[in-house]
Structures are given as C-alpha cells and as structure tokens.
Amino acid sequence: QVQLVESGGGLVKPGGSLRLSCAASGSIFVIGDMGWYRQAPGKQRELVATITRSGFTNYADSVKGRFTISRDFAKNAVYLEMNTLSPEDTADYYCKAVVIITPARSLEVWGQGTLVTVSS
Image (cartoon, rainbow, N blue to C red; front, side, top):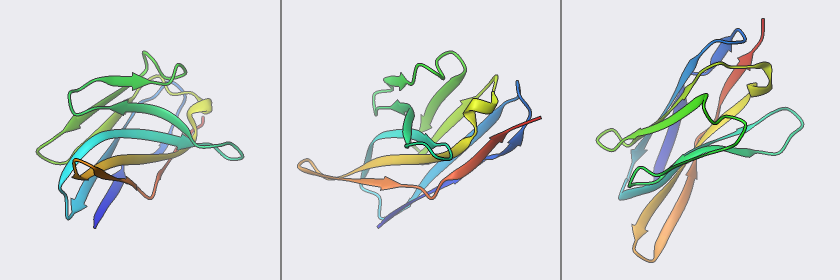
C-alpha cells in the first residue's frame, strides 16, 4: 500500500510564496506521473500541475509562470513552488501519484490535502 503525505500549506499574504511537498511511502514499485490538484470551497477539484518520469511538465493556465513543479526520484517526492500568490489560489491542494504495479496495471493514489490560504 502506498501513502502520500503533503506538507507546506499555510497562510500567506498576497504576493507571497509557499513550497508544497509530497512524499510517497509504503510498498512502492515505480511511480509514474505525479501532480498537484486543488479544490477551492464550492468548486470542483482542478489540475494545477503535473510532471512525468521524463520531466515533462504541464500547468494550468492560471498558474503558468508563477508555479513550478519538480520531483525527486530518490525521495519519491514531488514539490510545488508557488510564487506571486493571490487570494484566488486559496484552496486545498492535493498530491496525486500514479503507482505502476506492473506494465499493465497502475494505481492512482491521492494525498490527504494541505490547505493554502492567501489573505492579507
């Protein structure tokens, strides 16, 4: 069983920065794509950024140029550097990983979420 644990959320003022971390633990085989998603109050969960094993990244238009996703294979971790934060970025942020069990079988695993609040 694989678990994802996020950290780094908190309260930050508009224009500030935060760095989210997500580490995988447990019976890890190979981790494929990893990503960050967020869900604001009253809204659906949305993609923020993803990163493949080869390092290809994809960002939501709303965060391009402000957020940077990266990963550390040795630590089975993924990070999200968030800059120039605005109140619209306030949300619960969730980490997701695709765990490759076999070439024909994979499993999506989600973290429990970490709250980011941008407010003055």
